[in-house]
Image (tube, rainbow, N blue to C red):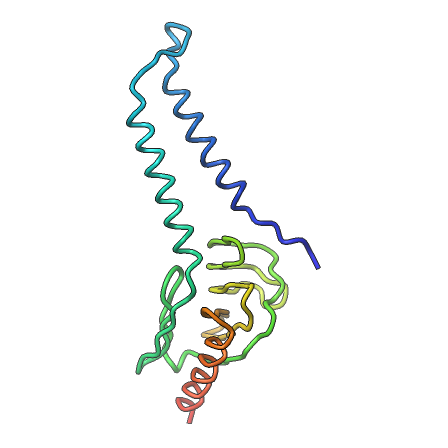
Length: 173
């Protein structure tokens, strides 16, 4: 089993250090050959605003997936959310383990929360909307694409799977 390494600390360090270097570079006057003290309130406000927005985005990325059953289909809310009609859903399975993730192609991976498109060893390209620390996971095959998701707790995910399976089966008959 491989070592799972989070890129969050490296991304935060890069973001903060880049903003600091930009602020330092703005204070240098190359004609005079030294740093001149100028009002940096605007830079500080901008930096704080960027950090707050990044924090909000990270919090949003770690929220559990919300699922709504509609008369016409299934709606997954949030980042990378989508709506599927009952006719589009080809297969529903309950997975106890996620497929082996090779790489993230588009999306976020904040701690154990994976949202977006990932390349896997078993299925190729899949859309993940999961907290990988809280199995099981619902596997949907929809129009030759694969979506894997879970919700807040294992019990909620299993109950959702039961209802989803019943609805998909009812649409087929």
